[in-house]
Amino acid sequence: MNAVPLGEDLGIESCTELKDRLAPCLAQEQTLLLDGSGVARVHTAGVQVLCALVRSRAEAGLRTELDGCSEALHDAIRILGLGEQFGLAPNQQPAKDPVEDAA
Image 1 (cartoon, rainbow, N blue to C red):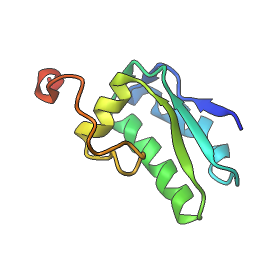
Image 2: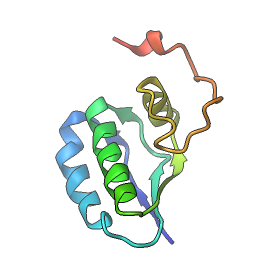
Image 3: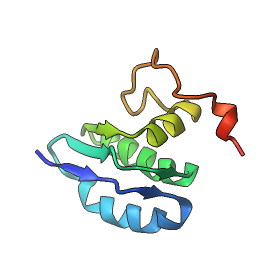
Image 4: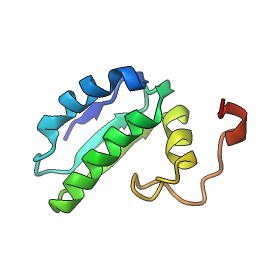
């Protein structure tokens, strides 16, 4: 089972490409692994695309997991309160103060 690399940029400008690249994975019967280890830039819109994928697959009884999660992606998921949806441990501490990068 191979992980699908998310790439470096999950900015708003790359969301259409990300959605198109992940669309064939919607019906993949085996567990879908998303490799977020290389993500350096994240916007809420990018996380929204990932949430829609995870939710759609879950509703179809299919499993999706993060197989690697960069600090940038982890912090974005945690700040947005979506850790549970992505299988991140609730007790993981932030790498830095979330207000620090809010601007």
